[in-house]
Amino acid sequence: MQGEALSRELRALGVSIRVVALTASASADAALDVRVLGRRALAPLTLRRLAQETRSTDLAIGYGSTTLPALSLVSAATRRPFIYRSIGNPADWARGSLHRARTRALFTRPVHVAALFDRASASLGSLYGVAPERRSVIPNARSSRHFVPPSAEERGAARRALGVSSDGPVIAFIGALADEKRPQVALDVFDHVEGATLVVAGDGPQRTALEAGVARRGRASRVRLLGAIPDVRPVLAAADVLLITSSTEGMPGSAIEAALMGVPSVAPDVGAVREVVSEGGRVVAQDAVAQEYAHAIADVSAERDRLGDVARAHVMANFTWDVVAPVWLGLIERIAERSPTD
Image (tube, rainbow, N blue to C red; front, side, top):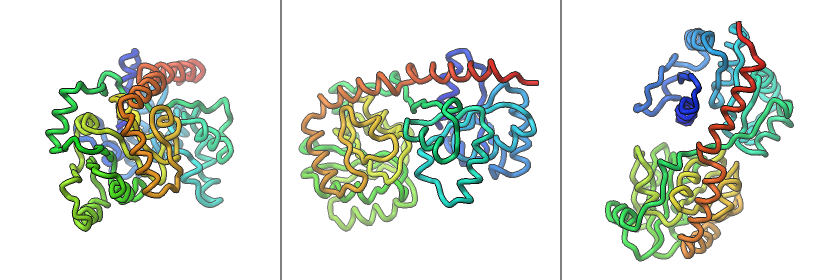
């Protein structure tokens, strides 16, 4: 849960902050000690509880799409300002004129909107009229102390734990097994990489279809379907390349995590992939076919160590909490100074 990660980093910078989730689905990680406000995001009881939470604050941050209407409704009553964190590109989910008009009205409520990347920020302006002075670009981030390159011994141990041989590239696929992540494309790509092993960490509605696809290919010994796992670091320690095949993305955290561990990525040109992956990895066309992914994987695997170093240097300079958290702090302080509360 990235909202909780942000709050942890802001606490370390001296901000008094607490995290709540509108619904249980917004707080899926049972390890997080987060208060859940209700069963439905916009139910009256949920909104009343949210109003109670925000009345005792100077500023709220809404992280993700359901928080925009919830905080918009609540702020009208509490008169407390809020920042909205947009986690994708609005151009990817804009629908008909009625939806755009309704969303444009909602975007008048936050005092500021934080987008993930430049094109997403531009979409906020062109689609929903968010003025330049009311929006910022603040990227995703991960901890460089949590994700570190493995030693040769750790890499070998990770491969042995997965039962992976060293005679071909190890391809990691990390994420929900959902339609927009296109795990079946990852399986098709795997077909075209000689001697590869595919390690899939994640679960979701495409799990059964993926298992059936593996069985049809007769290459089950070369595929590891791990399901949802609490820690992806062992998978990345074993990997030569991270494969992303999504039809849409915001700013993929898995690519940041991989780069911090010295693993280059191959990914399509969607969302903010290019901002993260272009240094030290390979970005393919959004409509690339399996063979194009496979060629990119072969190129990256051949230079895995060098490209992994380039990827790590790029991410260290742009996408770690050491870089990003102070930007959040500066934004919060500016808004708090000009938004007195009752």
